Each structure stands twice: as structure tokens, then as C-alpha cells.
Image (cartoon, rainbow, N blue to C red):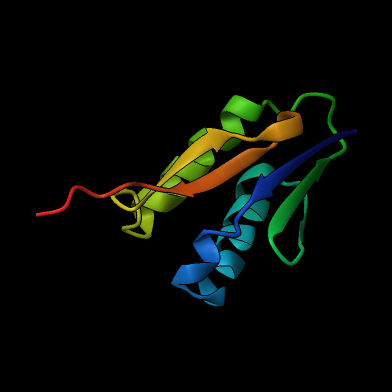
Length: 92
């Protein structure tokens, strides 16, 4: 069983609906069990291989679809987790 954490604490600034939409998107695309906790999403798969790189691509697709790609990026977190991090926007 593969278990991957995704830290969405910074994404919550966009609203709670965005996190729920992300959880539904991941559940639909991976056919895995997706739990939403306070500041993270847990993806548990019964299959032996759910590559972290595939989840990263799915997260990028979700950000693009939600028109949030300009404001957030996906980075590796501690302990093999993924993190949705806010981009530093250039000041005008």
C-alpha cells in the first residue's frame, strides 16, 4: 500500500472549496482513497505503484485547470511528501 501526503496549507487561502475540488480531482484520476485532513490531503493506493511524479503532474494539471498555476507551484516536502507552495510574485 502506498501512502503520499500533500501539504495544502497555503492553498487554503483560496478557500475551502478549492481543497475539496482537489481531493475530488485526485480521487477521480487515481482511483485511490483520498482523505482530507486539516492542512493536508492523504492519498492511499492499494496498488503497489502510485508514482509521486504522477501525483505531481496531476497537481499541476489541477492548478492549471483552476487558473491558479501563476500563483502556486508544487515542491517536494519533508518525508517524501508534496507541498503546494505560493509563488513569489514580482512586484510592479
